[in-house]
Amino acid sequence: MLYQRRELLKAAAVVLPSIIAVGIFVYGFIIWSFRVSVSAWDGILPNFTYVGFKNYIETFQTQRFQTDLWNTLFFTIFFLGLTVTTGLALALLLERSVKGEDVFRTIYLFPMAISFVVTGVAWRWIFNPTVGLNALLQKLGIPVTWGWYTDPSTVGPFHVALIPLIIAASWQFSGYTMAMYLAALRGIPEDVIEASMIDGATYFQRLTLVILPLLKPITLSALIVLGHISLKIFDLVYVMTGKGPAFATDFPGIFMFETTFRGNHYAQGAVISMVMLFLVAVVIVPYLVSVFREGRRA
Image 1 (cartoon, rainbow, N blue to C red):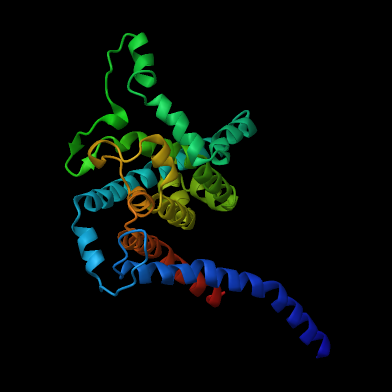
Image 2: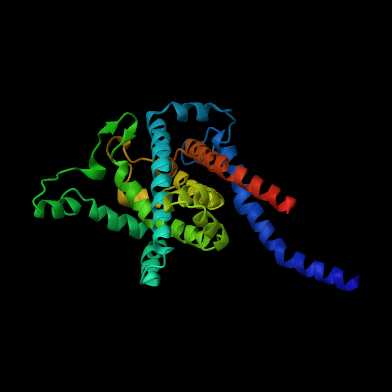
């Protein structure tokens, strides 16, 4: 009994500093941000006069924030779709034991080792309207003059300037989804595949009726991880395009940064950060609850 108590105390001594740090620097600052968001702090000097949800109402009424929410929605949808589809396609190709698989796997995973800042700089040059992809196409005799991320045109509420951002972000994370799908594909029991082949199923039928349903948990995990990245994206956009013409490539993270640290509108900046936290929580919390329930059932 004495030995168990000593081990328990040792474990508590190791874990307790982390618990205190997380409590202060994560949950404590969340509570602090919410307190600021319902205050009248609009300037360098703090002002904690309680104003209720007035700042939330005013922020949601601004044209820029409404544009940011539309941009976040479209970016999330197309980024998830393109990244998951590309990752799955690459995994299916590599799963067929192609020659030089290790080389291809390294090439596809390499972007994961690069920061968003480096990715943004590289793709900013590629989509530069005068010296990047356009210049290459013009040398090939194709007269392309598209402004890419400088084009303010829209299709409904969708800004076409988001396309380069979606491509750049998908390029960085397609290797990640490929690795997840490849591991899952190699975990599928061979007898399941052989049974479907004996039944006369074509490759397309095996893919749609056997393989893809077995990959659902991996797809869900990928969507959760990529979804929360897209909702809080900042550095890639800030380096690559900034807020863009007419806020064409603006996102809540950039709006929050400029409002808080350049405009000194701390209450409004806290409102935007709380909205971003809520959006991420909508994605993450149901997933964590389902994982917790599955763990208890096991």
